[in-house]
Length: 265
Image (tube, rainbow, N blue to C red; front, side, top):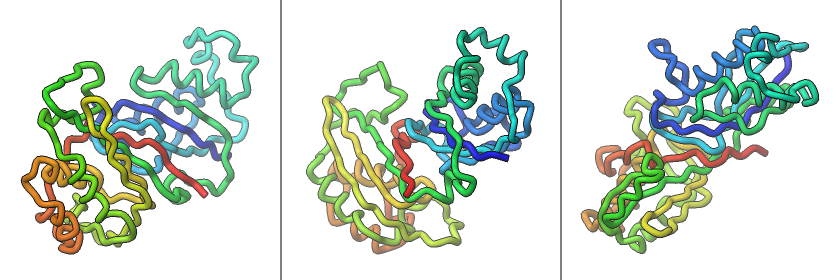
């Protein structure tokens, strides 16, 4: 077997998240595995760098998959694609193009290459960057609305930015974990967290060595409450120190969240 790394983009709006589920085929992982199995005739299991929730998007999801040595794209799939010039391409690039032909329009494999035998997209990951987009004022901006959460009211960006500073560094983020039965460590390191106001929206970019379930969305929900003035700036540190999920704000909707990049040493 040989190991292959994939870089994937997707719009998560109509999917039940990344992870394959027994009761539905409507997941990103499920769609990718179905197409790849059809093309190569092999039973495959694609490993993602993490599980994005239903409705969450990605511009830089990394995954890996084991394929048998000597794999080839089935002749029927090649003919059915109607893509020209595939015989002149390296095997990985030809497979990537044929995969994209058969995948839905909202899933795109942007890179496919052979990887070291020990590479694992999740276990080898050193960190990730997420972005959350918040629409402000009364500007609906219909184009691209599925990629942002529209609050529709002005937010105090300065207060939000000050509160965000409490999260940088290594902390126990139990108060921002959406899984009440979490048994593993909830300590994470946030190496960068910045807010940027762009036109009619606020963008949060946050980088860390790992993220708990719903962690970014709960952080955003809390920041929005601070931006609206319903919480003081000092609440962020108090919530963090409490390690109590009930003290934090609600999880912001999934549609504003996007996995931008996964980092490897």
